Length: 314
Length: 300
Image (cartoon, rainbow over all chains, first blue to last red; front, side, top):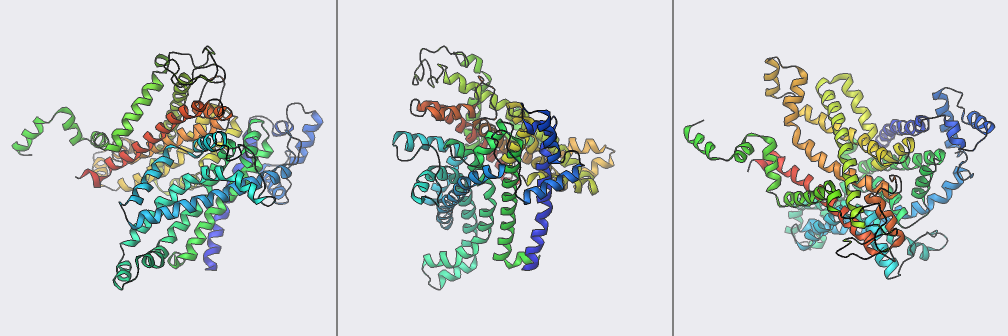
């Protein structure tokens, strides 16, 4: 098992390095002098010169890259020229709302998706199966941010049940935090729930056709026990993998849905930074999101190995 | 072929004959005769007519602020109502749809051509070229589409044209991978050997013979990526990264509508419904092409 985990981690490292090189080069690919870009429009020549030495722009590209990586690991992300704050502090306030939203939408996706997939899968062409198909079709046509706007209109504006904007930290005030989280989490999680449900349905339907399910039924087990103890256990392996792979989709969804509900998270931070050409902020946000994405994929691989011994052998 | 067969053959219409002879026409036939495909085609036709004919169909100007009031609810005069600047929302939705179609079509087409060429050549040539190209493709696919698009927009700056470039860019690896797989599946078949022995050049073999047989899966992928392109274009415009006001876009309309939900529900609902129809149709079309072109289904 240890060898398997190590091999996976070693495989993920080149991808991470490549991705970080991509994000690093981003600033150098922007037309113009990076130092002048970072200094902003009304910077003096001294400012530009200071930034140039700070970023080590006079060194060779590989040296710059190493220096940049070292800075990131030390949490020194520079100062945002648009807001004059250290980027690390901006990130510290923006990460919690996005993290809370991602976790909450994950919960929503699992709570809706897995049971719906199981119910549809154990009885294909039943009412639950049709519900699943209809649900999938709806989420394909109505993406998260449109669904979010509709919910915002119905539940926040018309019925006034939920706040229309903002976020509250879960640690400070769990109840109010959930109140703010409910609609965005449903908007983000609903689409991912459909992906999980379809996947769960397929695997369950496949497993239900196996001999061991017939044996379990033949020896007189209650149907609920057949499903929970025998079918579910054997179909959860691919489902767990797909769950981990959805983290990227959830993050992307969260970034957009934050805009609908005006949540002050990473998505809004990045969008505002792109508009203000605040490159250091964009760079830092991107490297965080991409690392999370790659780590989630790695976790999926490792989880797969834990659950299915056959994968490890290969 | 016996005489009786010939008789049957002669009785078939032009369309009937074509669907028997050609993979392309039989695929089209399959799409039309599939309920999902029929719905998708009707929906898309409606939208394409609306988008292409926008200057004729929309009686009001999408930019001129000439309606008799702000936030007029939908009526026979203004089908989708009016917005905060007294502009006709039906016209704005149609022109937004038009922009959406234009960006997605062009960028997916460009991405397809480049991606398929890379994939075909990599699969056909093999060796180091293949390994290098495919590793690069893997690396590109490691980025989620939206993040890649955001990174490209940071480099190039916001704007609808740059969204198109971003979409073309992440369309390339998806097609390269698929095209390579198709090439590997086809290149050792007898018909390739036959044309090789007839002295056909490699380029002719790739693009005249193999490309035709690899066509249906690529078409499925194109319809699917069109849906993704439409979605990402709208999402990025929604984030405020695609607009060049006062020109409308579907995502831009949805973004502004958010501030006026209290005054004008139709501002969000009408463009949203058109957008949903577009996504539905493209996804259904992709499914229908897939079903129509898989050999398993065709053999019926």
